Length: 447
Length: 173
Image (cartoon, rainbow over all chains, first blue to last red; front, side, top):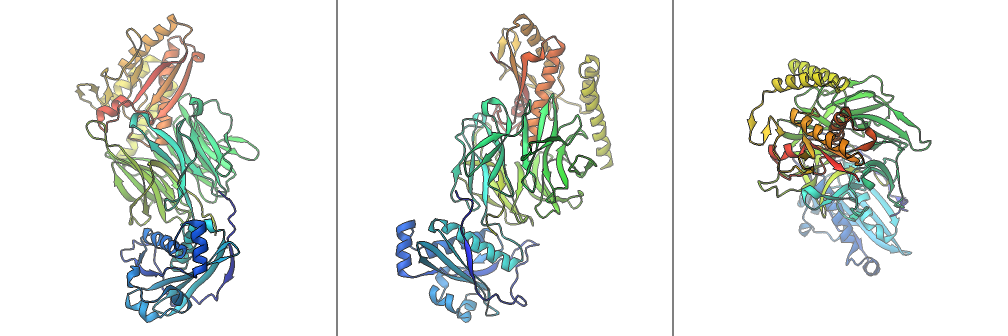
């Protein structure tokens, strides 16, 4: 896969004024998603034939608009309308929509666009229209290699989402996770990566050794994870572009629960020795290792605040698993979870204001969020077993995994990825080719 | 809220004591008696409290030497039965001085993955410390935590979970 995808925004059509136009409020549960019409991107016959030859897709304009449609629907904030009701042809709509027609089918927003084949490249332009106001809200064009067509659909969705909600999107992103197969007692686990919508799934390891908890570097295509290679559980660093990997640090025992610092320059993790797990960091440039916690209890699942100044982590120093926050040098440790039950896997939101966590109370598992001082606890979802939330890069969606209860014979086990909005709405299963766990969401691949 | 806090602090103190004095059998005994009272437990079939007491999954290092010990939920304290098992293992290892072992620590599925990795390590080390007090050199013992990754029983019920909370002594050579 390529790090640098040459998408050049070389044409920015007249930006329109923003006042008075439609807006989608994403801060509360959206029970009334915005009706939006995604007109198939128009394409001339010559371009269509060229792309059919290269990409084996009959009409790449329609394919890209399908991606946008699915993304918008999945977000739970938009209701893409049925194309059968569209009255205007795609090419004419893109030139000048007849707003009365779109108004008639109750569309409030409209996406139109055009695809062309230029110098062996894929050129896509799109326009976002406010149907009621009869105005263009956004317009951009991209040129890239044809094989990037799915990403173009995601990038357009990100632009539309940003224009209508005022916040960055999360569609041009990938998920790294652990693919699982086989019986519960002898599970085979592999690292796998896929686009946020489940496309382009790829396995990164063969399943010869147990692998757990992969996490993206927020600034590059590096991943850190736990591998039981040669039965020595250690934190590894993997470059997903080149496939090269290395052990992180030289610890005389198990290292686990790795995550990157927000600048991507350090790995923070636990090291277990003599029954005591402590939190350490290692600088990836100068390899300097620092011990951050110093307590005879279990200290694990560390996660940096986005400014890198604080760390939230999981400790049982009070007797049971609870969430604590400390300064990044390990000083000023404060317990922040005081509700009933056990708390684990704290993860700091990329927006900085919230910490997501797993909670176990009376035999049920919850995914929830609290403010960084522990106040305002809100449980988003309850289940037999679920854990390990990971934030979308805009801090609006959490992805986690859920396991089913087995029956009396110990059968019927499955593990799947699920996502839920911060609002507690829009809970949905994220489809994967095999069972799946330990998801980690990448940053936006382009901006 | 206040009550649960106080209880948590109590537990913390007990655990710390445990940690510091874990080789002093008397104290371990006292702590165990305490915690047993605190959560009054019933005996049912193959479990005492929520510690597994059956033999379904147990294998043997040699005749009469069980390979594993079991733990209560979220605990790494050795029970009376566990200590007896480990004394048998120590006697066997003293007689067979060339054998080296791996202590594999495990947790049940009712916990977060990362915490369970740490808990498995803590359980295996509880067994290691006990073997060491009975004369087994630490350089014959290595420790490996699997967390909740390798259950022996795939059930989702308290009995299955009790079988999975274990430290297993495996011959390494």
